[in-house]
Length: 486
Image (tube, rainbow, N blue to C red; front, side, top):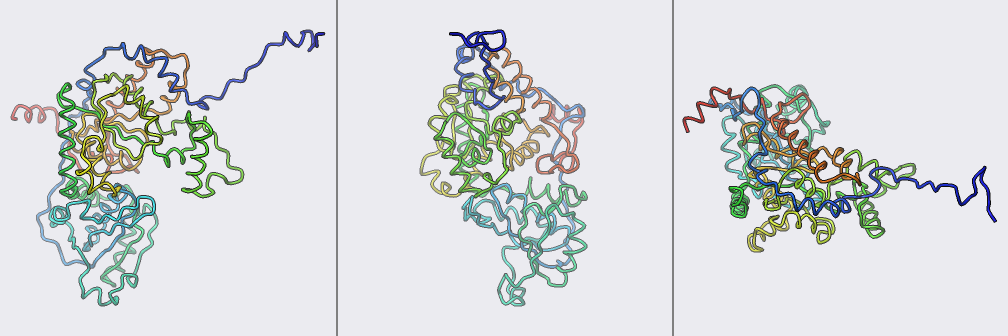
């Protein structure tokens, strides 16, 4: 017996298969499996030699932070700040403290590092940075001392909690420090500012910006143990890159469990992954993601480019950008989520991939291993020396590193900053072929080259964009003369 729907029998009605929303399924593993044969047959080489072609139309740039030779007037008092957060958030606090102390003609106490429950690193300033270099490089601009003099502390019963503490709003303008902080500094002779992260606006007078430049690019150098290990690892990376004249790629990969949990993105781990991510979210951000009325749409998150790139996706991207499987890669990262499974494809695509753990012996890493900021400083230093730096997720680490690379390499960051929205569309396309994918990715690489030299705009960080505040333009004629005179 046939049942009828309208004029058609029920068994003749076409089945309507609902298409899953874009990005709701993590398709990159299937894409890799389908394209791998064509990828392996692609014999493109030489990408490292040709990756950076764009030159700024006005010429290259060079560091030009003016040195002061005049003596410092009598100090208005002492400033004590607590630098909180991870390595580069602390760095922001240090540089801003130098700028404020110089602007107020104050003496800066070596910043104290606040112990944080997430980073759990008890390192002091001198464990991370060369304190003598810091003090000496700033001596003509800002007085820096190691501790508060006893005669000052006597006034406060040798108790730091008795010292007046300013609670300053985030991104305060420098004028606030002159109008509000300076009178109290002169009156008390000693003040605290805590917390201090992001307590100075991006834009400031040129004299303040100069002090920021001086602190970040010249005064702050890593401690000798960090420099020594970093130089050893850079040397080993160059030995492994002999086929490309010692040039290697560095990748900052953010695929740790907490990063994935916070993103609310879904990958290919099924129910077990969901349980782990739900647990991680509850531990790290109790109740934040389970509030009534909160709707989480993983597919939308992925298609707007907010999901952390997986190791596999980084490999697909770099192979599509023309880097062969003979390219040496230095991977800077924390503990990769399910590393054995998730790293396998990246290692297939780039068998010369290294980390600080594979380059260094256990004995060499031992003084750093339980200190997250020291480990991050080693990663930072090895990445700074690479021919190409690849950022995958944003954050303080790549923002500071891009600025440092601009300062080192004539204003060009030599950084690949992928369009993650575009990547999401490409990796979600079940029909795309290798040639089409590669064409899109080569265009993305060229865009990063074109954006390598950028000027700082209002409300942007001088630590990411040192031109033109920390660097001067070298016109083409001068650049040609300097090349011929070498």
